[in-house]
Image 1 (cartoon, one colour):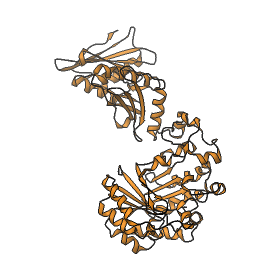
Image 2 (cartoon, one colour):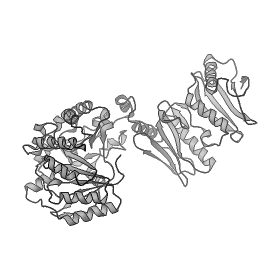
Image 3 (cartoon, rainbow, N blue to C red):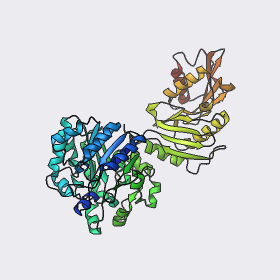
Image 4 (tube, rainbow, N blue to C red):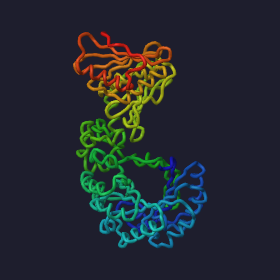
Length: 526
């Protein structure tokens, strides 16, 4: 897992490569890149460690070219950073002795290699430096031979995107643990002409085929991720697409020899992004932060078509993107919803990839989460998710009113196997709570749909309402007398149908081999 707080520091623009997309190579070619003095660098990394940052990434240009590079590494180790990432193009780590010098400092390192093409031709067409591919491959061999963690980064541009399907064959034998591809950001490319930008920035729709083949070439558990590709271009690849990242503060070079104050990396990186108005209808709207404005200026918006819930279901029938499906469901369910008093508003939040929260805000909030059904039954369950209480008001009546309002709204859009009902907000006797929990785990019961749970006698009795497809109703009650579990059932007027009879038998069988409890009433008419 990534540390919660991480910092990256640019050790200067000096670089041996001249990548077509990179400001550092351009600054070096123009003679404006200079070695940075050591003291300000050490001051910044000491301040970062004192502020609680646990992971540090050393960036360039090419950081290993800085005369003070090893001094910076030694200080980072001495300060106790849990992980030190060296982001390099392999120019110096191609020498095994240099890798050994780094490792002798005793730090916990990750080597992040800047491979700008999965083939020699693509890489060197992008770096514009002969021999750069062989050096970086040699570097990875050295790092791998020493048991170090290595990851790979590539900026996606016209000169390299067609090569990406060769990455599995290149990286898997080298033991790489991660591949990150990122769409080129025009503002990070330096001062470029319109012609240079047109030659640099590919049409996103052209990337889909090579990216599909690349992802298919890696094992399922390989960490491959694609940054800043609009989800709508490849919703079937959404599990490996991301916008933004872990909370990261960046210290960059201002001018020739000055370091900036730390700034929020991903907040700044999306300042030149925007969205077409149609994006508001997309299921990925909450996790997509838009498209670079320069890209929209160059190519327009016709590529970007909102992904509907129906389209998402087609490309992800197994709901691997659980939170996206759940967020789409609750967004529809709570559109225009006015929460009951004393709650003031409703908020919807994705909690990672496996949970979505619905929160009724108030002096005391009520929150439920939708999670995959396999993670537990919770207070209610549908075919593919369960509902869990995450926060509850102390006032039981307020809790009851809120939970019933949430259940009513959700039930308009999904069929529950066992429903959100007032028992979620009630204090039940131990035997009743245990039997209800058992029924939730074993539902459904034949053709009977479980519609409601009513709580009576201050939690010493509950009544469960069921409905057959024909509309026939049946009820099962659970109680406790003298500390012993009791129960029974009743049906409506007339002879119960086979569906009702079989459903009730399934309920009784689910409770225990002997039926509902120590005492069970005979069937009665409503």
